[in-house]
Image (cartoon, rainbow, N blue to C red):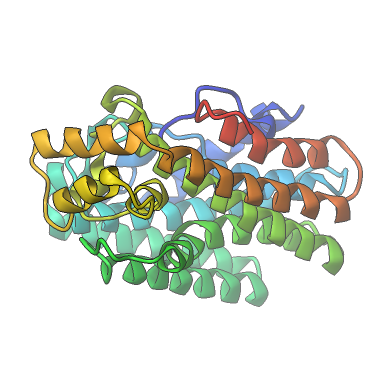
Length: 331
């Protein structure tokens, strides 16, 4: 996802700057190998930047207890970040992407075989960290990796499918994006030793936040510029991945839907991509997708009712709405 133009309330927590330093240290240590070549490849997207939102979510979840965040909480969040990074390496191979976070993708720079193996290496390192935190965390992360695969498969089986259903889209993003945010929040609660009611509420919040995150990402892929995204605008449509703004435009039942359907269903050259982007931007698909994101904002806010009062809970309650507003769509 592109970098949000506003600072997330999660990043504004009093201790988060120091915690983010710990995240960077742990994540870089985690990808070091005895082979400098592998270390360079595995750290490529880490060095390129990123907000490390999954570790931040784990730390924020642990902070609802009001006690200092342990190094093990940071390590648990980093395990989720490594799963995310590994999935990006694999995704870029699948999509034949050239850029990510404003730099060359691993596959573009080193080749597909190296990208796949480096992605596997990141998943392995994530699993090592999870196993050191106990069987519950290890099992949870393994299950989540499976959910990511299920979400990606659901997306792939509907590539270039103009008849793709919204249920397919929601199942896909629930698996490939929201599940990992839910797991990051859950790991934060588990490792911090919180009670089960709080852990379940944190998990519900994480899943809802993840749904907002992905819908906003899909909106920005339509509305934002190539420079802001760090990858070509409309990339998903070009690759045959029809997200919620596109699906809502196709379902509008007007001339715009017919024109869009005629363009889609096949790879899009630049001129056709720009025309398709224009159609989606000019109709209600984007706002309709934002309305669905607002429902998940409300679900995330509702989950916070079962969390202890405090700064961390306040930040978690505010974060999904701020994320949606970062797409320049009032929530």
